[in-house]
Amino acid sequence: MTKAEAKFPVAILVPGHFNDHAIGRIDRAFRRVRIERADPSLVTGEMREAVRGVASFGGINAAMIDALPNLEIIANFGVGYDSVDANHAARRGVMVTNTPDVLTEEVADTTIGLLINTVREMYAAEKWLRDGDWVKKGNYRLSRLTLRGRRVGIFGMGRIGLAVAHRLEAFGLPIAYHNRRKVEGFSYEYHTTLKGLAEAVDTLICVAPGGAATEKAINAEILSALGANGVFVNIGRGSTVDEAALAAALENGTIAAAGLDVFADEPNVPKALLEAPNTSLLPHVGSASDHTRRAMADLCVDNLVSWFGERRPLTPVPETISVKPRA
Image (cartoon, rainbow, N blue to C red; front, side):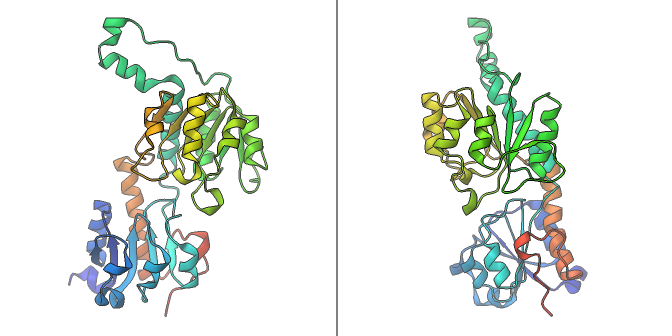
């Protein structure tokens, strides 16, 4: 046992693949227990007794929580934690933490890049050059769409939504938003309904979290309200979109284009979206830089260290804000 393990003789369960930097820090401060995936049937009797913390990308449901009777904390890697049953954790007295703030700027940068790529067809234009078509066929076609004159609506004006809005201000674009409630102190135009927002803008950016409240919130009605010149960008959660309705809207001209970094059943992307010529698709890379993922890993592990060392979380999620450490 190392000195660190003597100070924190705590078993931390790490299901499946995890960030290498986080694993290194966990190994130095705790006793890491590996499991192939977050499946209650894989939990051994020894794990049931020993495990007091979980570090995971998500996917911790009620059954998994119940399989670990001595569990005190779930440190989620990522700001989104809809795949963790935080309400059940709260009822069980289990703290849940996430990694906000440290990925905000990176995701906002990606959002702007995805928006520009979608509107100005950057990927297709680069492919035209690389394939030799510039030499053989001449200039790439003029892009049908532009950012000029657009009105942007943001669905989910949290930390990331605000960072996106600040960037879009530099483009000289008017901004509106929809949340469950108005955010005080914002000068942006607020819409009480998502449909009202979609009707008022022609560019809709979804930064909303996943979960039952936002399940398929972007549906045929919302896309129709966005209109034929509409551009939809999703950097939040794939579950917020009715992907069949989106594919149909792209095919029949209900909206003009879509840029997506997230999907409902990752890594499986619907064929209709893959084949649509008016989509820009990314493999969930919103925060995927070495710099940002390292910061996320540090905050994930810092929550574990603080919980077991100082008996307090650094970034608890709202559902478990009142959970107290066990004696």
